[in-house]
Length: 261
Image (cartoon, rainbow, N blue to C red):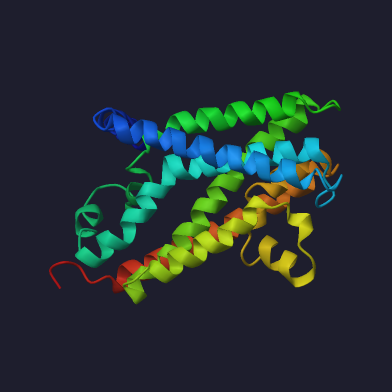
């Protein structure tokens, strides 16, 4: 309950601050709407030349695209601002202020800044996903949809954990530009159905660098006929990645040179 109350304060502060910069608030909305339109157009053009992509038809790709929008909006709304500040805090010694707080440092640095100016885009993304599922021509059971929505949240958490794992290397490298660039570049693979990859590339993107689990696997749970197996695998991978993040984070705090060093 203490953490929930603390997060409620984060939300209240973030929304009040966002209202002070209204131009940025509306610019962020326009930027994400254009990004959504670009991806919808991209897949529409592809399906002018083929009937299937990675084993999915156009209606299934629309569900995948809506899922991708939601996963990206969660990342941008909840985690991205905090991840951007982490290398700066480490290099300037500002991490000291969070180490002395009577709460988890990882919790504070991961969730303190809620991007209220992206929250409306999250609602738009949810609307697009709802529309895509609603227009799907075949019936989908309520239980399957509930499991799918749960896996969307697991995928969003996994995306955060992968990103923080890469950024935590700043404790040793003191420059996270390379890690951030690699993360964003590899994160682009999540915007394609995982079945378009073959052989070693698919194994890497579903195990070592499990970006394909962010959006593609939750959608696969709707159409593959094996939703429970998909859930078990995603939970296993998310647990392993988060455990690796906790280990690297603790090791990083041990070598952290504070502002007083």
